[in-house]
Each structure stands twice: as structure tokens, then as C-alpha cells.
Length: 315
Image (cartoon, rainbow, N blue to C red; front, top):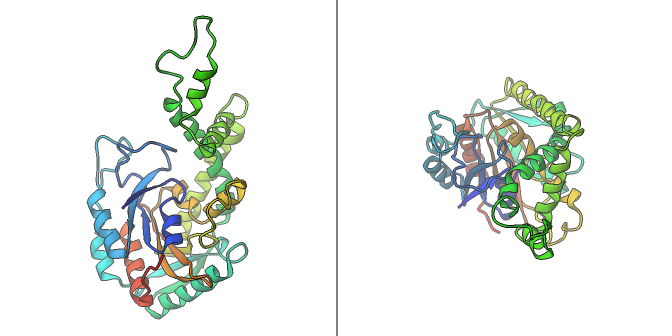
């Protein structure tokens, strides 16, 4: 299937359900026809049962689209050929030290470490990389995303089009209710946060600062890719949580995005693939990230790890 990933919404569901999910390079797959959440972050990509199937779908949906002003007019990398080759001999795989250890579930840490050993046995060179500004990614993202969300979703709030006020110039109770009926509580929360962050007197302090952090994160990636061909992290800090468990704790829910958000902020591609099960039988995902327009590296590394593990997704 096709999903959209603004801060991890392809890769995290893939990790938690034991399938492969890919967020391509920003602009590599057209966003025409999608409802925009955050225009500088949103990206469509494939879900599939395995790496090769994801590559097949990726190859079909990628490419330049003149109807999308952010679409990249560049050759689509040979993702299918890379998935079929599936060879990491001589590949340098960077482990982001800021996205391991404390805060990650024990089984997630253990299966991540085991996967690195498997990659090393397959001929990859494992190196540690430091991305010091990643610790600010979550805060920057949750200013940039709601700000763009507030702007984008204004077109759906029933305020611009059609009669919305009575003869006395005041909105009726029914009209006010209609304005909010199309949005759930989480969307409303993000719209309000974004409207505040963009408001007079706060724009530079919040949105402007977040964009500066975004630049620093992109620099961290650039430096990391000087010593590594791809980067590896756990996809999510934990395996799947219970339905409704985090509804009343949005901060806890947002922290699930800690490993996936940096790729969206920098516009680079990321892949999650299943690498095993935790003690409760729930799938664990590993994430690969590659430089912009080097999506084929994800499929090369992912295909090799998938073949070496020989593990089939079992939701």
C-alpha cells in the first residue's frame, strides 16, 4: 500500500506491524492529490511485505510530476536493482550514538545490536557517528509541523467559503460547531500550537528558531555521510503499544518519533524493516537512512539484512 510520512508515519507503523516501510527522498514521489499536513515534511512512500516488493512500488510511484512544485526533476535511483543485489560488502554503516541506549526498550536495543552483528558478518563496516543536534529534533519538529499544519488546514475549517455569519454579523452556535466538526482532537491541538507559534511576537522565537535547528540537523547528516554510506537506528523506542494507551499523554506519543523525525527535517530517505520479535511476540523494526536521492542504498542494505536474518513478518 501507499502511506504518507511527515515525521515517521510510514516507518513507525511498518515497524510495529512487521512490514517494510519506506519514506523516499523529499520530492522524489509526487505529493499531488495528498491532503497537506506539513508541506516541507510530507512524503508519500510504499508499505510492503518485503524489501523487493517495496522497491517495485517505489519504482512505480517515484519520478518528476509537474503538478507538484516540490517534485524533483531527477533520475529515479535503481531501487529494484539494489534490492535484488542486496550486498553490503564494503558498505560503511553508521550507528547514530544519540539514537541508541537509554529510552529504548530492552528487546529493541538487543535486536538492533544483533542486526549490526549480522551486517558485519555480511561484510559491512560498522562505524559510530555523532549527530549532536538530533536531541533538538523533536522540539524543532513540533514547532515546524503544527505551524505548517495550521496554515495548510485553514482551507478546511469552513471559515473562508460560504455564509458563516448571521445578519447581525455574529457566527451562530451551529456555524461555530460546523467549523470544528471536521477535525479530531489531535488535529485541533496541532492547529492551535501552530497558530500560536506563528503569531505576532512569537514567530522568530519559535518557528524561526526551529528552522535554524533544522539546518543544524541537516549539517549533522552531511558530516555523518562523509564517513558512512547509510545510517542505522532503531525505528521506534518501543514495540506496539495498546490501542488508546497514549491518547491522554500526547508528549509520550510524540516521543515515539525521536528516531524518525530527523530524516524528515533533512529531506533524506529512510526505511524500516522487521528484524525480530520482542518477548511478547511483537515486531521490532530497524531503520536505515541514506543521503538525498540515494534511496537505492536503503534497498541494498535492507535487502542484505532481510536475506541474512531470514525472518518473515508475523503481525
